[in-house]
Length: 305
Image (spheres, one colour):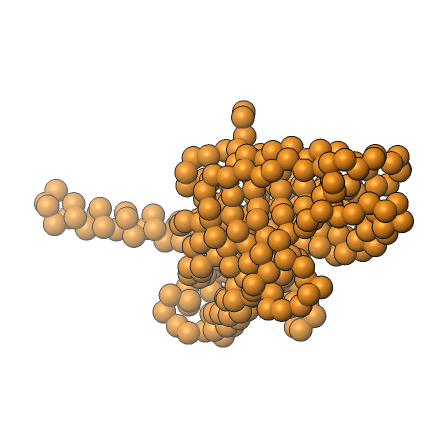
């Protein structure tokens, strides 16, 4: 066999294997990738909000098929006869930059899309580019509303607090706090207990899969305060939290964006964190002012395991 024939056979084999993989094995019809200045968890939440918004604006219903650790989420979109999967893979480049890859598969036209997308600007291709571009624009607008600064290792102070235990999905923690504010502050006022400083939020349990958190909404009080028994409002000494610290500037509703930045930072530094958080709100939202100037100090403890 001549060298020329060997080359032809090798090239033909490579092309054949590629076509088999591309047409029969490759899961997505089209993939769109880009980077964004945000932590992986922030992008992950943005994907969910984008899906919810498209149901209202475009009557597109998105169902979560699979999700994992705030860096992977697979959505199925069904609208009339259209059936498309969107597989979002989020890779942290650093604590403030994420690479986003979106694999898109149209089950009704998959074979045609794979043949046409590399060579032609089809309606399917144009529609998907616009969808993801809209997502990126909305996310970038959202990112203008807050800032996160990683401070490195830090520690909190010991504080005697009155607190109320709450539970919610991650996105609704602020609403839960606001709805419970009158209960705890009313109790303290009626018992002549003065609040000494700004409140804390102690996340005692955070389930990544369900995105449900259990937390204590805490108000610091004087160390000499006489403890009063109550079934709802409890008292305890908030211990020192030692771990990775970040400063968050923005509305308290989205302070968890700093949690995600700390998680990405810890991964790059090979630091294992507990799924617990301490937030110390240093600004009073009732005083108004620009939200971007509201300050919160956040610590996530380093795991001992």
